[in-house]
Image (cartoon, rainbow, N blue to C red):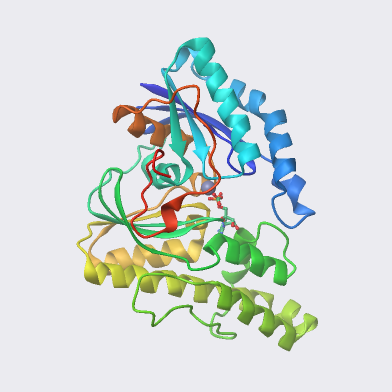
Length: 349
Ligand code: KG4
Ligand code: ZN
């Protein structure tokens, strides 16, 4: 079965065709990140306007691999959480296609989609099989969530950030260091050759006893370090400052993963979300899995940040579970997911 996925929750306009929820036939992404860079973050109105410009060409290219819309069996679209004006563009597009073609429509939770990203791949590079129970860490620009996944789509939220999301922390750190937006990849690249011990920064909630994380104190500590060092020294030691920041972030995340592993049965470690592209987080998570004798599943870097292949994959799971959306399907801006007991069900957002 082939599902067309459509994603427009933030600054990426994306469409993809995925077979049986696992094999990517096409995966097209147009990013408006350049349009936002001058403003230091995503400007919702600019994002919406760019979706309007990019959506049809992106769709056209994505369905081209299967001879147009005729070649797909269902349509899956991100309904939230995200920027409402942006989501509406994808939703209206998906609904119009479903209405005109008579094909089934499925609404997808953006975070549910991220959690599927490690389990999609290409026909010549088959994706890994999930094995349960999993410990899944979802780290993106808007969320930092740790789940115990007991079966497909059965998740218990173990911990969440109490303030900034990890990606947000990277982006704020990049702003403090004058590295532009978005900051995650640049900091990651600079940190790779830096000495993390030269400027150690605090690890949030190290002794909290729970599985929550916090990154706002780290941001303040970085800001104080930068004022103390002065511009010239920060420029000279930029890679070391970045390495110190990255060390504090990854240590905090790994600490909570270790703690969760001490308490729960787990057979597979899973990373997802934009920050799952981070080289230090990937390496340390793989090392943790090796130490504990677990399998480790990381999405390919190209599927860490927003894309529609993961939306189609999550759409397939929803479709298989019998979910169908009507033309009344609407956007939602936020989810209760970060609350204890919250779940990823689209209906119970
Ligand atoms: O998942 P995503 O594309 O968007 C959301 O749904 O939020 O994640 C974007 C976030 C940004 O904050 C970006 O700075 C961060 O992912 N990011 C990284 C890396 N690549 C992207 N953070 C750390 N290291 C990276 N290599
Ligand atoms: Zn995302």
